[in-house]
Length: 186
Image 1: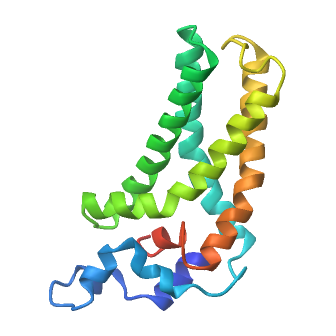
Image 2: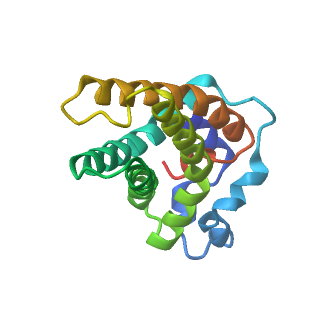
């Protein structure tokens, strides 16, 4: 919760954000407004980066598993299966963030902008690491849903994606970017 407390100290609280007479309201709807509040290189904790990465990985994993399962069940070739899995990973990754930000009272358009600013780089790195791992594992793309290799490959790919993406998230959060944009709304 260290990251949440930091953002509550550094930024106006949600009540001011919702006050129509508050002159800074438009800036709170702009996900790029928070980029100038970076705390310097590497100042985000590993715990904060791990939580942000796990949040992102959850959405990506839902989409990835669904896409791989659909493509595999339909007997699709590797390329269309991966395209579907990657597309669904982005959709579910963004959707989890949008859901959380909507609960904080932001409108849909602003919530989508916040999700795009917060998650795009993280999901991109995650998907490159994840799908690269699956492509490199012999037989992983040919495995079916009933094969242990299918599930072992996915689990390994998610672990690699986490290890690759956590340092990226740490670096970005330390500069007030990426998941740092979302934490203001929690």
